[in-house]
Image (spheres, rainbow, N blue to C red):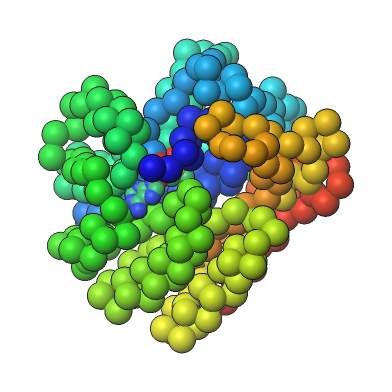
Length: 301
Ligand code: SAM
């Protein structure tokens, strides 16, 4: 079974990028009155405490959401960052950031009951899927949210195209298995054939591994071949000398802390590129740790 547990990483810089882009994308889709469907293939536990043992051990939120809320940027954020901070704040008491919503809760907070929006969640880890189910039950969201302990790549197949014909597929694996990189690309390729107008958002780690390096290139090729617009954004907070290694319990070896991650979208909101070009330099300024810090926004179509 996997050793990856998102609780160790919740609220880190990668979550800041991912959830900020997720919010912008869901908001864009819900700006039109017709219903949308969101499929979250790798959902995690849904809600995390930043003062839990997990979060304390890794301290990754210190270099992410907690650094951001304490920064001067929080007082005057660019629109994407403002929306992100407002959503995180809505899960917390005023002036505190103790609870961090994962992608299921970020998305659900933006969906509309009356528009019949639908959210599908898949999580394979037994503990996290149980935690997710318990968290979702507290929402009393009724039929709006469907969840299953299942392989998200496989489960997605049966859901496309969604009856709403509008929607988003979020693919956010932990990439513990080398095979995940291949499955992500194959899933995008197959899904675009079934649901060509859907928006797809894929998160990936920027790490020195050939598969990780190759993934955005492969995704660009797939989107170009399908004649679909795409957007690619990377946030790199650089290496801090004193925190060059993090050790997550359950992992055999300390691994270099993640310094950068990317999101790749097919059929992105047309407003997203300009908004990211404003937000990412400001985020690098705040979250950047020095050597290697950078950001990138590129698109086509
Ligand atoms: N999307 C979540 C968020 O943003 O809050 C975080 C997800 S975490 C990066 C990846 C999750 O995928 C882990 O909880 C892991 O247990 C789960 N997982 C791994 N392989 C899976 C698969 N094939 N299908 C569904 N879930 C899987």
